[in-house]
Amino acid sequence: TTPIQNVKAMTPLTNDGMLLKPYLISKIVDSETGEVVLENGREELERVASTATVQKMIQLMDDCVNGIGNTGSGYRIDGGELVGKTGTAQIANANGGGYLSGEEDIISSFSGVYPKSNPQVIIYASVSRPSGGSQKPVSNAVKEIVSNISKYYGNSDTNTSSVNISD
Image (cartoon, rainbow, N blue to C red; front, side):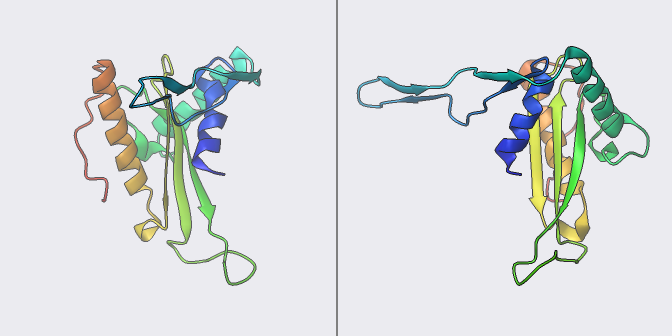
């Protein structure tokens, strides 16, 4: 799947079960005339989940990140407000059938929402062929993003310090 497909799939979790059409550009303005050429807004596609299903999915994603010893535990932040799901995908062999088989021949990803108590932001990050097959470059980047989002929104529950995303 593409990053935009992953973000689209997460929209029901931040919109009480309503699937939204994602867009990358909010507005295009003609620099000479000031005329708005394009302005995107909220576009609801269809209800794909009930409130109860959304709450259950958030709980499962909370367990993934904030549970002890789970695959997402490297994404845990102070306050436990980040929830999500990790992913690992094989890379297809371009020289024939099957998949590449080296330790680093994977795509490592994370899809999450923040904050858990009132999901407002969808976060998707991935890295192809991470060093040593580690999730650490993705988890460090996600934690840095959440730290910045938390500061932007004035949330005090996240005390994540700056991290080097290349670790």
